[in-house]
Length: 490
Figure 1 (cartoon, rainbow, N blue to C red):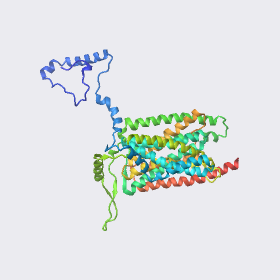
Figure 2: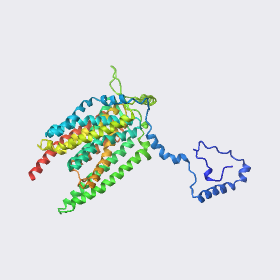
Figure 3: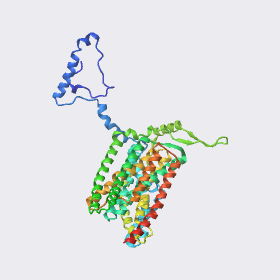
Figure 4: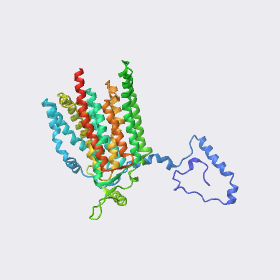
């Protein structure tokens, strides 16, 4: 007979529990009235003890299973490398490491000469290998994690350069550089990095597929962040169109920006819960069908794409059975992240200090430096990682790095910097330059069109890259004309 106490119910899954055999008709009819009584007695006993009835542990633990699966790597680690081999891998992982020499050169020039143009160029070149090694160490750590967490970690640490540059510029009251560099980072990730991923992957595959549902969610999040930037500009324009002068207009925009920043941070926290916990299955790249390779050319038929879904799936199955070879041990990977981050912080400070002297002649503007040059350097880590994995037919990881980085900047870094400026007493708002806000909105719109079908090809990548070049050219002339008009008015 089963016990009448709720605490005697074994905490095992339904498939593991052993139940007694069904009773015969006579016994069941004789005990028919006793069954409901026993159940009601058990509920009464558990209620009197102040305890809830026991639940199926598979339901109770299912909320944590999705989080645990995210930390499982796609392949087993073959062997942990030694410390010396890990250090050797850090030095020789990329040809960009030849630019390491510019790190001490930029430091020496900062304290010895006063030519800001030379300092800017040397510091600019010094940050490139730092960002590259930051991405390399992050990728090594990501090999020990699931693909979703690896993409999140890559874009988080990849954005460390942008965060450091923004905070340093904020301390020095370079608010235009802060705003333009953050907008430029979003544009660089969405158009340049993602475009090169589509283009590089399209050189090997006629068509690549990725998670369309997750892509649409990302587009919605980017649209919300752009709306948060456009609302303060629309608010200011609507007030000024009335012809009335409001002395508190700037303060109202500042307070509105503070409230919007808090809301954007709440949305980003919800996005993390959605991605890593409640709906992590939507970001499982194993549900995506295989990509389409180009058909081999023959003398009797024209070139045409041939679907190789079965071949791709077999290849994926084989790769999953293989063991992963890592280049860095855990201590060296973490140590590299710490050391590179410190070097980036110091070099970025020298870089920001030299911007004023670089733009003093008027040949180049601060906005163009922040919108185009700084994001290219800051996104070097994401750029290398995303393009590399796209050629390996891991386009979901590329999108997770490129688009995920843009989402993180839009919903986390920008509002975080606004709140930090609020704490520091700086008047940094979400009222960005109208031209920059419009091109940001158009960039998000184009990316949404290119990703809505869950497929990509080299032409879509070319479109995104050409749009980025078009924006860079248009911005070059816009900021020069605007600076000339400001000088004439002053």
